[in-house]
Length: 290
Image (cartoon, rainbow, N blue to C red; front, side):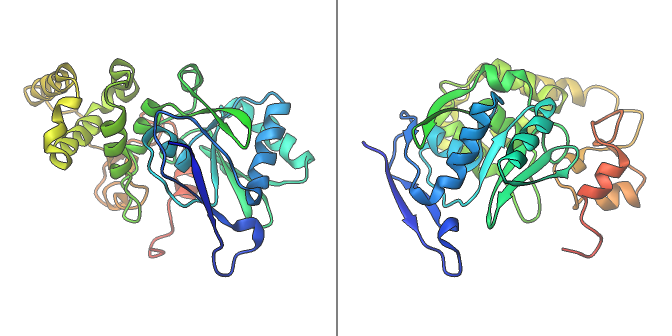
């Protein structure tokens, strides 16, 4: 089935901020066209390609290619190594874009007018840095005639698995990625990505069986058995000596009471995590702002 796209004007938006909705597709294809109203994004991709800045396209576009699920979107997520962020911002600034390092531990932005791209080099919890493995396993595609690479399904699952905010939960995206891509996932690599955070992966796999009771066998039996065996071994082992809270890796705000009032150690903070106290403070909304 050929790719089709529908461009919808949103009330109150300029012609530059029309939203693109890709519809009726098959996840086995990996090519789609971008409307003229998306010239901004094509321009960003062209600049980075010309400057030889390695990047991967993620977000709604990657989810669309990998699952066939259409989603209205007016922004673009680009995944870039941390060490490439300075020259990325320099290249875009020289081309007339406004740029900023929004959060020093994971996110930069580039914009013109109302249009913007997110330049992602880690995750909000600092736990999922963009490294060489993302690029080694990227998926080929094109946007507006430009050859690009998409973030791999395994890394998308890994990063999305930790997003359990009060206002945003990516569990449905993960379930859909499992549903469509389970047969082709590199499960061993996925297990390595989660490492000691394997409980988070297991939780999503358990929910997958609840969401799709007739599709449980899409998940390799060996993977489930390995994770359940780890759970059994952990139950029989003594608990950690320190009071730790891993909830802060799942939500930047909902577990603040645990680390601020209940004396639990924040697993985002070095040496347990990758963030400094200042970065945590910058990333955590002020109390009462929700």
